[in-house]
Length: 183
Image 1 (cartoon, helix red, strand yellow):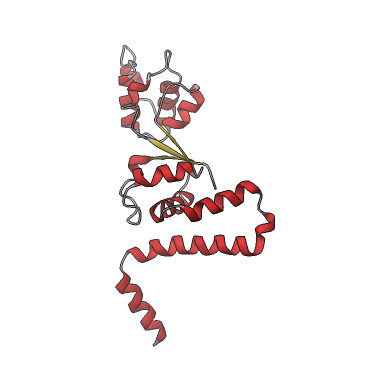
Image 2 (cartoon, helix red, strand yellow):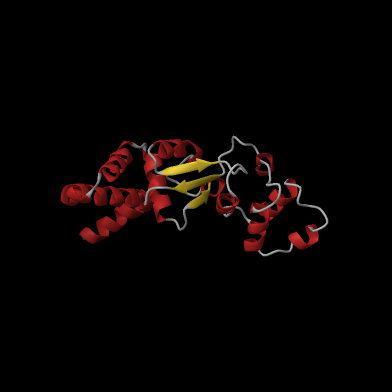
């Protein structure tokens, strides 16, 4: 009978329950680490754990979700609306940046071509083609450029001479990517 009550309680809580479990399990894991293995943590790790505990609930949920995702860079627009426990990713991200869990960036050409290529990886092929067109790469070689596979298109846009200006990526105030710092 106890098992059936647990199943009924789970069904009554609805779809939000699994997400709450993820954050709850992560908090239990952190508590266990702090209780049993705190002597193994350095100052930076201790500060990160304390910062997590001070984050608002949506920012905590987003932290857990980002830790479970593959890759260091995430397109903010792809995260928006993806998680019911995070009503607004744009509102949750600044707290994560302040706690040094993520680095926020607007894609810009003020970085090296290698760093720019890394940032461009969050874009889809059609978005990369749009960036190439806005950056003035739509000249004689456009037919050839528009047929390149994604990896070669990334290289071509990142190594463009002159590099695409920041305006080619849209409004500079728009946060386009978040890079997970803490893992």
